[in-house]
Image 1 (cartoon, each protein chain N blue to C red):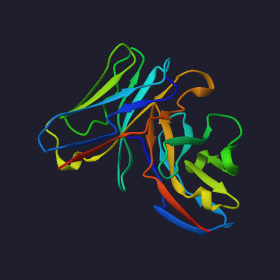
Image 2: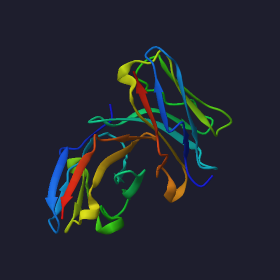
Image 3: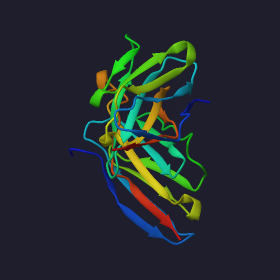
Image 4: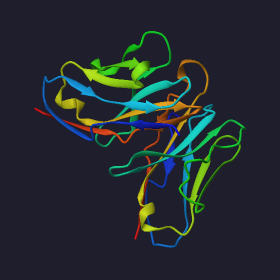
Length: 111
Length: 116
């Protein structure tokens, strides 16, 4: 069965620290990969996506993610976080049409 | 409409009652999803509708859960004989299945269900 695993449940960082959130997926076919973000009190929204081509994709607000096929990973990174990045982050994989999400990582950035 | 609309936004019900949650997707979006968001459980896939194809119901947790999508637009998620463990936020999302928008989901605000 398809699955997505996010290793960090809650990450606490100070402003300007670097961020990397892990995501691994389990699916044998061609994948499309996504990171969604949910800011406090807001809807889930797309942060970035990978369909094909350059495995390093850039999203909004300075976020990027790298698709490493051999590791079944799609980790999210940001070189310098801001207090406004406090949110819950969800990795997702398109598996045969439906989107499967990980359990989410709550990021708290201290000012 | 401009976004995905869900109703009710909040529902409190007694154990054993049936509830219906409604989702009105973005006009023209052929794909519609239901997810359940519980504390510490992330986003649990429930059901996926794509055009006129048979829905993917593989995520429905029990036969008390059902969903339909009428006319390829509005969807209703029904939970029969609700249990306390059904308490969660039920999220609906829609997407186009073509081009660069494929599988890019637009989410509604959710329906928060509390079963007493």
